[in-house]
Length: 218
View 1 (tube, one colour):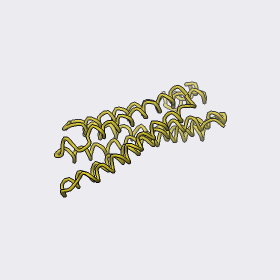
View 2 (view 1 turned 90 degrees about the horizontal axis):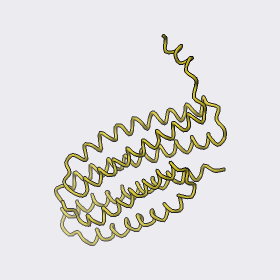
View 3 (view 1 turned 90 degrees about the vertical axis):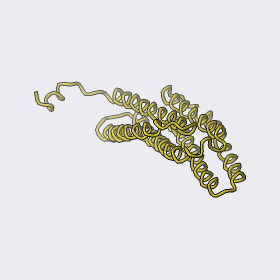
């Protein structure tokens, strides 16, 4: 049987079914990004030589799924007869896709920076940096939960935790600038500042995900 003929025999999914399936795939993308964050912690916390390549392979899969889901969003908006509520939902998912993809990109950057910092292990302020990353991972988990449960009030709670991450960033950058004296130490300092900046931006993207859900309401 020709593929076109087979498709004609298969009932088309309703707009609600298609949007629901998109949401499940979005949450699957989120779980892949969560795994990258766990691996990024392994790179930063010690000489885990396997974690960084795993992050890069995972990022390729994240990018592939991201592109497919972005196309599905565009297809839904162009070819499905959606209600206004469903249109807002799909648009919010498009923004969430971009935030999650960027979160994954920062995990890949952390992998590269972690590899460069391997000769300096244990790195300066390691425990504090890992605490900041753990807070960021908690933000992502809460954001994905708010998306899954349609929790429109989660944005404010995540913002409070994001404020902690911002304070971590400012405090640790200041401590690093007061620690280094040698040129080698300054090189490590610069890489650690980049690590902190990645984590701070990851937290912002996690907060964005929950806020996309809240902003869906008219």
